[in-house]
Image 1 (cartoon, rainbow, N blue to C red):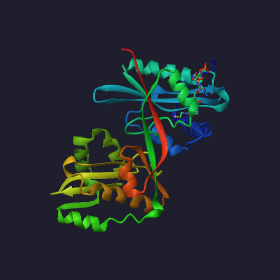
Image 2: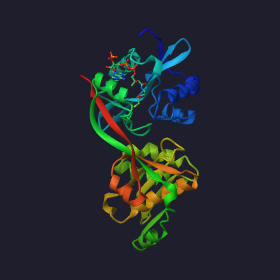
Image 3: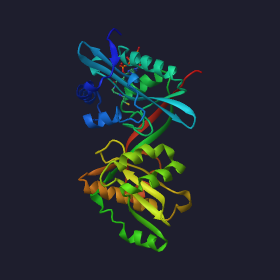
Image 4: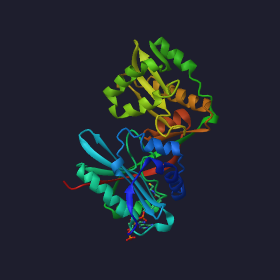
Length: 303
Ligand SMILES: CC(C)(COP(=O)(O)OP(=O)(O)OC[C@H]1O[C@@H](n2cnc3c(N)ncnc32)[C@H](O)[C@@H]1OP(=O)(O)O)[C@@H](O)C(=O)NCCC(=O)NCCS
């Protein structure tokens, strides 16, 4: 492999976006979304984003990022692509070697592919990208799980929740959209149960009005649902959560539908319920169907 590799620079964005769209058969990304994956990552790592060029032309790209989750240091290949005309020449391998060296320096213990909590493009490798599966296996990654993105046709329902919300009021539970001033209460609630979702909740609070709905009991947040918190503008649903003590009261279904109603009002034709999870819940309440599936890979680094 004799093509030079350099670090990504912000003015590469537009050209890089065109390159990714040419190289990915099953994905289309906009400069805004790419920016969200790059500088929009809460732990953005400019020293781990590599571009390979033939003269001026981009022929390879690999972005790495890290997370510290429950005491384990994870490194991720967050995005990658090699120009179709330059494959099987070791370019992805050369980019990966650079990335792995950065990860080793940072004492990363486990490397995964694409499924980056907080800010991600897709939650694993879509197995239709068969060369990517072959590549991952050859590089020492092992498949450890699968996940799916569900598809909801927003036109099929009006997503009305009024009657069920009135029933909850009788039980002392109020469901409504979160106001900007609810932000701290929502973040505190998430902190106790699902600290990893904080960033996405913050992203949903960036919208005006916030793309987040909450259920309150005695004035305290007990459940929430968000959308437009990752891959903004694409109909991305989630995260959502109900306090364990209050599950089974139908709050989750109401909160889900409130988000779907918002997305329909935004003019979207469908919603993506990503990285699932309880398929039956979404199938039952929203007519969601399995759309894309993803295989998850990891490699444990030697200590
Ligand atoms: C996956 C991808 C990045 C691999 O890039 P690459 O530069 O061709 O990979 P390398 O040359 O480093 O391949 C190293 C090894 O991986 C394996 N491999 C790569 N592509 C393969 C293929 N099409 N079939 C079988 N094995 C393959 C081989 O063992 C290869 O070594 P070899 O050529 O000596 O046999 C590239 O195919 C690509 O960009 N695909 C489309 C985008 C994509 O899938 N992105 C990831 C989405 S999750």
